[in-house]
Amino acid sequence: MAEGKWLRQRWLAAGGAAVLLAGAGFGLWWRSAHAPAELPVGACWSVLTRADLKPLAEGEHGTFVEHYGLDYGERLRPTGNGQSCEVRRGLEAPLVQINVWLMDEFAMNAVYGAGAKESKSRLDFGVDVQGWVGPVDVGLGLRCDNPETTRLGEPYVGVQVFTRDNTPKSARSHRAVLDIALKTAKAVVASYPCSNPVHLPDSVPETAANIPSHAP
Image 1: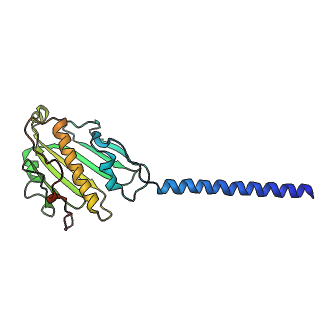
Image 2: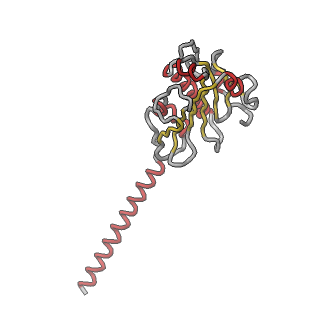
Image 3: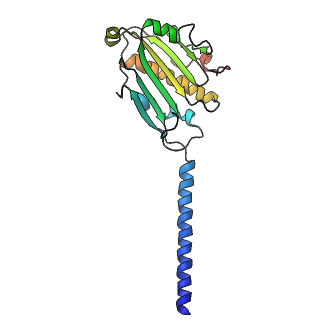
């Protein structure tokens, strides 16, 4: 009789401990699943800060890391292969993707010239830059005289920034894509470096910050 009572108490105690452990595990999972996104520091050739990425990660959770493609160097430099970087979580679509590559004058005009991407708005980053802006992407081209770009016969640099296109973009996330494009262009000019004068705005002009009303 006493032994049966003791066994029941042991079972109840074990069951209570299991419930507590399960509850603690669920609490840890819930906090982890609903914690703000963990974003990398100094991402994409050390150009982007967490503050740059944060507007694109609103409502996101989990850990995001940077990945390099094409030329795998972790610094911006002129290369015939082009360079790319993306910040993503696992195998999901990137939070942001940046492509940088060299072009000749024909490609520059075809991709970024006045008649290119007619469905998108023209990008206003000053007279030294040509480009366009859509709801979820920005593309720009500029001339960059450098011994390597001259040797390759491709004195122009293209920069394109994409973000996810599966949700409507807020004004903050749209502005973040523009900010990232401008920061990347400035990093190209400084890192390659470009010997010719390239005048870029200190910040994104208000004329460029409005979300285009038409689809990409």
